[in-house]
Image 1 (cartoon, rainbow over the protein chains, first blue to last red):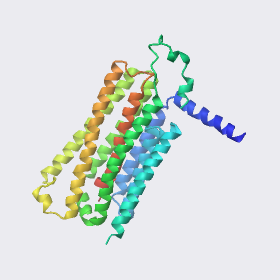
Image 2 (image 1 turned 180 degrees about the horizontal axis):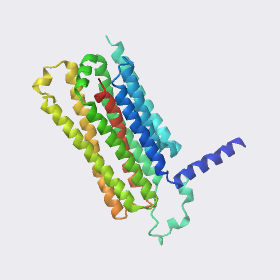
Image 3 (image 1 turned 30 degrees about the horizontal axis):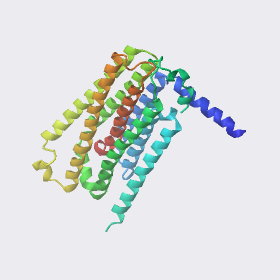
Image 4 (image 1 turned 90 degrees about the vertical axis):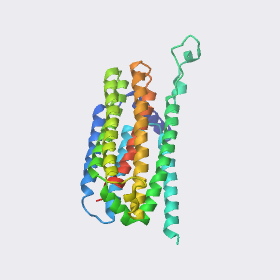
Length: 108
Length: 215
């Protein structure tokens, strides 16, 4: 009973989003957010947070990238398969980075 | 996914010449697989950057001080705005507004050109300072700085090449819209071209803090 109910919701959801184009307003809001984050990261780069400076800059970059992926590339509104694609690619890249870093760090 | 089920039986009849079989989901999946290979290409370069930055922290810092935060920031704003006009072009065609879409798409190409012009100014300033791969004054610097500028030219150069390729693709899309090959009912080509453009934007989002925000 419960599973059929959730199935109906999922189907209705994806069908709805494919039909109606996303409003121009939402795109403009996302763009404003991206511009604000760019200004923030440029200003913050002036301060010295020692080791955290790079971490903060990369976190802001990640936030911006996820805004672009979700809204401009509308992954948020797409089929689940696209999220699976991205998750697999992200996981692969993480594994490559972690293995390389551990190699570099522990090599003597 | 439900597209095949929804397809009416007349799609099979020969009479419906207008009714071309379209697999929008498949087209987008193919595009995404291509985009992920692009992502891995750049991920490899980011990995090289990360390892060398760890090994030559001081050199990378000195190199980073030389790049111009202003140029990087302006170019970030330009690319982000071009991504906005790109999605607006798709939004316009979805609503059947051909000329609005043409306007937005042309401005996207224009912003791409502006990005390359700024990049050109930036590079020419660096080159006039004598900083380019293999230059005598760069070779006198530390290994870290040589690696930093090598990666700077390789990564921003490869990215600029992608911007240029994107502009060519978008020009084709512009022609398709003008010739009514991309319409309200069939715009997956424009969507896929847009996905490519946004990927190029995302790569820049990461290049920006790594090369321009070291103060």
